[in-house]
Length: 155
Image (tube, rainbow, N blue to C red; front, side, top):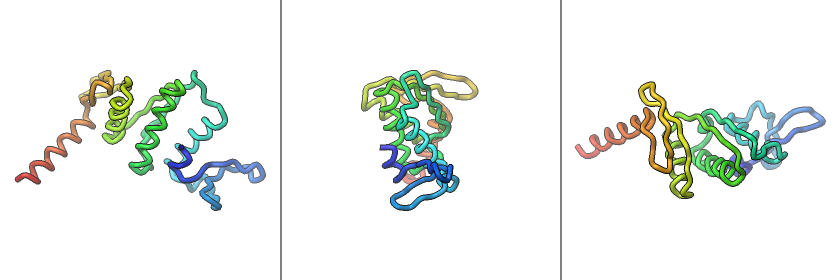
């Protein structure tokens, strides 16, 4: 599923002693691949070679960076499977309303707890996304923009 998101895979060339991103019959140096492709490809490799186990912990900073919104959504579904089906603990840091909303929807769909640590005005709060969206600057600004849009449209 990870390969489907990036449309290819990352392979190691033993002869050249280099990593490559392969898409179809084309081969590119990993250095020219986007950060999003690298992020997904690394996770694919770790899963594929059996490096990740139930005692593993994965940290992903700004999961959404350099990924198309559809890829973000698909990636979060895979992260959900890794966390709940494989039992691997995953920590995600994000400033994206989109990421928080998708995690919230996953919690609702699967009726599972997804803990969330969130900051608001310098205070740290602990939330369970199964109980709803957390109150934080990301959510508050998204709501404020929506309300501003409604004012403009309805006036």
